[in-house]
Image (tube, rainbow, N blue to C red; front, top):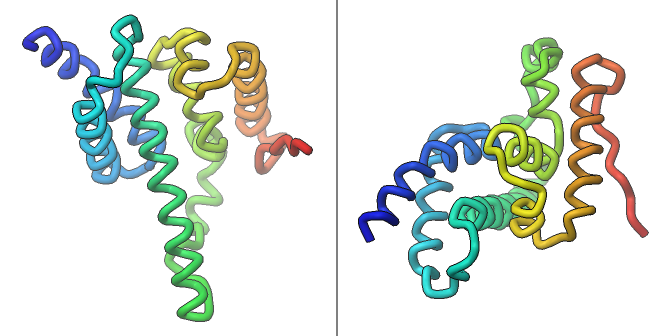
Length: 170
């Protein structure tokens, strides 16, 4: 158990960094990491012994984020129905629009999946196979999504597009 504690302590900064990139808020990121660790520890018996702990934890964190994001979108739609309009608090500031020219701002404008893939591969050093396990998709899908994410980031950084295009599947 001490070995597990050490390994978890080693992974905490990486999980937090990834959570901050998803939530864009340090306190929300801390909450996300905590809830992800709680979920991981409570479902420890279901973890495959041959699986990579890091990939498993990132998968849990990512899914926790998506679930929370879906819940908040549902809540905001209900709030909009009851109040009769949108809350002006969610509108982007003029400063943010003007400053959004550097690579970091371009990175933030990518969709969640593109940011996650770029972080996992480029920052965390996960393999394509590990990313495929996290997202539960084939490796080829990870490779094509990563290619599109890199291209979108490049175009955003160069100012050639204002928002990345989403591929519509029928």
